Amino acid sequence: MKNMKMYVNGKWVESSNNDRIDVKNPSNGEVIATIPRGQAEDVNAAVQAAKVAFQSEEWRSVKAFERGRLLNRIAQKIMDNRDELARLETMDVGKPLAQGYADIDAAVRYFEFYAGGADKVMGDTIPIEDGLIDYVVREPVGVTAHIVPWNYPIQILSRSVAAAIATGNTVVVKSAEDTPKTATRIAEFFDELDIPDGVFNHVTGYGYEAGAALSSHPEINHVTFTGSVQTGTAVANAATKNVVPVTLELGGKSPNIVFADCNVEKAVEGVVKAIIQNAGQTCSAGSRLLVEESFKDAFLEKVVDRFKALTVGPALEDKDLGPILNEKQFNQIMKFIELAKEEGTIVTGGNQVSIENAENGCYLEPTIIDNVSTDSKIAQEEIFGPVLSVFTFKDDGDAISLANSTEYGLVTGIWTQDISRAHKLASRIDSGQIFVNNYGAGGGVQMPFGGYKKSGFGREKGWIALYNYTQVKNVAIKYD
Ligand code: NAD
Image 1: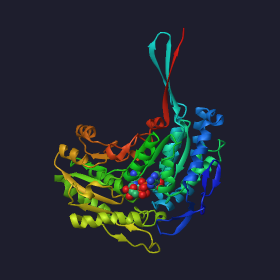
Image 2: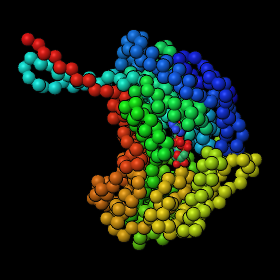
Image 3: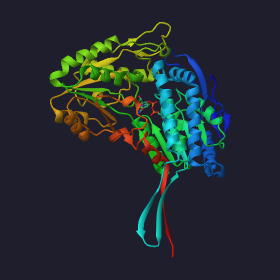
Image 4: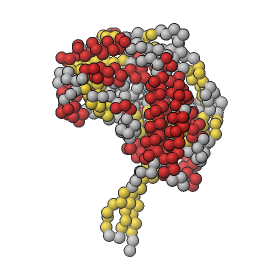
């Protein structure tokens, strides 16, 4: 895994210009691998291979349940290589090892879940009139593009690739330039299967080169993208020019809404975990704490105590938080912290942490910001780090409008013992997922996931995501 290659049309290849990109270990800044700097020409080769494979009789004749079996074999290979994959993911992303393991286990579940779905995506018959049979079938869309970010590489690849293959499509993955290792291993697993060349392809490279070439390619039929709003908008624009549908998952500014009647211990734990997972570099991070005004001091004190006890260190040491991905991401977070010093109060954290023998890693104390206005950048923009901002509300209506006060709407946590209030808030908050007295339900491979507002459109995970990769055909047959 030191000098990786791309996997195109069943072969391991260099980029067309032989250029390479360094991949660094976020824990210490060391170069741990290199990848080909894929160009438009390489992307085109992958798309053409996926197109030929899609149109081949060989792939078309693979029965639905057999596609399920193929996916189950990938799941088994991931399980068989669990330790190795967890370490690769941990080294690439810088996440604590236990979280690396959790990501590998989730990847297995995606392949298993969509393996089970492969032969259960059904059509319909529609009553029209005597002498006319009308039926609806769901057919694969064709060549699917999957542009994957660096924060959850194997999970995000698995959730869309498994659904696309389950429904009979072919795949071109563009992994993030910082985190290509587990995608390369998945390509190796596909290489070991007896399937036509070109069903699964993996290209590496920069977003503005390989990513842009993929999203604008006229012969892809669907794009799945996870990442920033800015890049997601560019990807959607490029696909629109070719009239190609996109599924966009673009992050959030997700609130945890805490009422005074909550189970305090569980709420504290939920709020803390929701923002420190993967050092806050999570699209669904619970980055806003909205707490009932009368309860703020008592609750915040407990959250601060937990923050102060959190440990920070290199990923393989499996502390509570690992490093930030790289200097660029770190500097971006620090800009928000500097702003918070001017506009509000840093309750705890806010400083870089120096770790012995890992001086080139970018480590940050988990941070709580208070006393910023609800329309400030800190309250509105995705910080993408272990930074929690605190706001208060007086009543249910106030909590709802505060929850809805950003451009995002991905995930919301509600902590209360009052079930009627929980239902009311769940129905009024613009958010793709709502969790009551928990946050994330342990990952939820089966639960539709995606955003309201600028958090994106379309849904991943769950049964519904299979439909991203199918198109509907209506057939009407007249008989005498
Ligand atoms: P990004 O959105 O630019 O990158 C995500 C993926 O898109 C990567 O594979 C990248 O190579 C690719 N990409 C980049 N430019 C592209 C283009 N023009 N066309 C096609 N693909 C392209 O994210 P980033 O630069 O890695 O991080 C910047 C910010 O994005 C972060 O600070 C964070 O706020 C946000 N982000 C969100 C998520 C999420 O899960 N929602 C994930 C990663 C980053």
